[in-house]
Image (tube, rainbow, N blue to C red; front, side):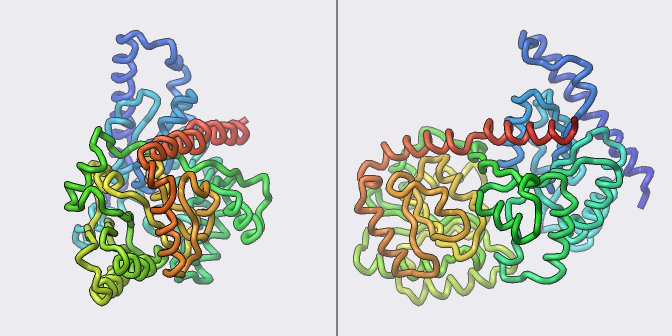
Length: 434
């Protein structure tokens, strides 16, 4: 493996990113928008690098757009999945595609080679960049290495390390926690200069469980997902595309299918609902996580329930351009989770103004305004879930769904504004760098 070649590739990518930014900046100046443009001295220095782990496009785009609106200059380490116009055409962004292709269907030897090359590029980049602050949005492939060796490396380079902890301990959630997992988490949390979480409950768990100082942790909203396309497609048209009658009471389960999502409880609740009312329909849209063994168990439960003909199954990754169809075809989003810290699916639903029925786990209850944005039920209780779903369809929320969709959108855009996220984040950056 040619290390000099990889170093050259990084320098070339950096130069290309600078040239691209310069061209975009010149274009913006020629259009007469120079008033909001930082001066050339500011543009010569990037203060923060976002280390994305190569994915989570909605979060990366939302945060970047908000930070650059705050007149910050952002350097992004990303992948092909993030090589999009919103980043490439932003003159205040320097995008470095160090990760490249991340397709899951590649041969094992190809995956090993490309991840090894990426880590070497990342090490070389960290040593060469002038950014003072590294903001870790997600770790990379090898969590233990990222949490320990990489963290020590970043700190030895003199970087300020900021971490967004979307989950406090995903191993506990996924029922595969271990001594090594908790040890590596402890190292990463202790070596981080500052940590962002999304709820007060998450902050308390982090401070108490990992013995951190409260002032080291800040709570930021989970910014609303604004990357999915929304057209003038109506609910009636969306249902028609999926093959559902306009008057059917439609439930939606959306996102990755994994044991902590509690889908088996929704299937059991739906069996009860469909038995008493044949206008109920359920959409399951998402890709099984890990091996897919859990989905096989759920599929068997669907067959055994006898209500499979009233369930629409789209068991695969749903691309952004098709997401709108499912959220507009649905009358309510169901999150029957058994373990969770926070759910991006809930905020995706809010972006489309869709009410939700959620279980009382993690911080989900804190994000629901009872009777206005949705309802809360007990976890691991299919009977209570069915009762709560019936309660929703008997409520004014469903009776005046179009009106409530608009109100939920307004609520979400205010409460989960990216501008609020950026203001808190910028204050932390400045506090560290001064």
